[in-house]
Image (cartoon, rainbow, N blue to C red; front, top):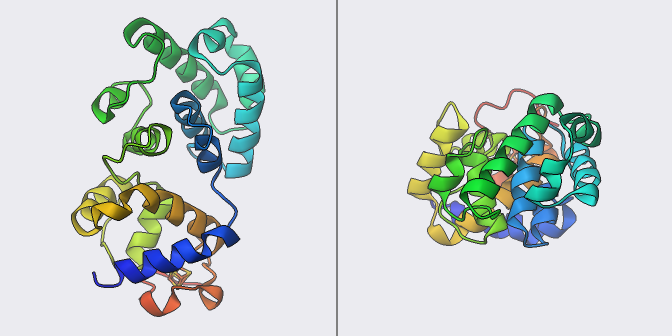
Length: 216
Ligand code: SF4
C-alpha cells in the first residue's frame, strides 16, 4: 500500500479546511469520561445533533455521580433528538453505576476493560483510548473509516470490525492515532457516504473509487 503515506500527508495538509468531528472537539478537553459519553451519543446520530446534545448534558452533569442523580427522563430530554435516546439514557446511567462501583468513578484506560461496559463496542472503546487517554492501541473504525478504506482499495471488507483488523495489518503504527480523526473529517466533508465529491477531492489520483456508483 505505497499510497498510504501520500494519502495521509494530503489529508493532514487539508485537515484545517474541514469541519472537525464533534468527538475530536470534545477530546481537546482531555476528559475521557466526556469522550466516552459523547461517543455513545454519536452512535447512528449526526455530528451536529451529538454536539448539541453533549453540550446540554455536560452543562448539567459531567461526572458519573452527577449523571446518576438525574432521572432517565431528564437525561432523555437533554440528549433528545439523538437516535435511540431512551436506550442511550438508560445505558449512560448503567455505565455511570459501573464506573462508580468498579472503577472508583474513573473511566478504565484499557481497551479490554472498556469493552466490558454494556453498549461499548470496539469503535467507542478505541475512540476513548485514542482521543480520551491519548493511548493508541487500535484504529477506531466507524462507517467513515470503513467506507473510505474500501473506496481507496486499502481493504476489501464488509464490516467496520473487519476493516479495523485489516487496517492494523497495513497502516504503519505512526498513523493509527490520527487516522480516525482524519478519515471522519474527510468523510463528513468530501468523501460523503452517498455521492462523494470526487471532483473536489485532493486524493483523487490515489483513489480507485472502489464501489462508488454516484459521485459529484
Ligand atoms: S476520489 Fe472520491 S471516492 Fe475517492 S477518496 Fe476522493 S471523494 Fe472519496
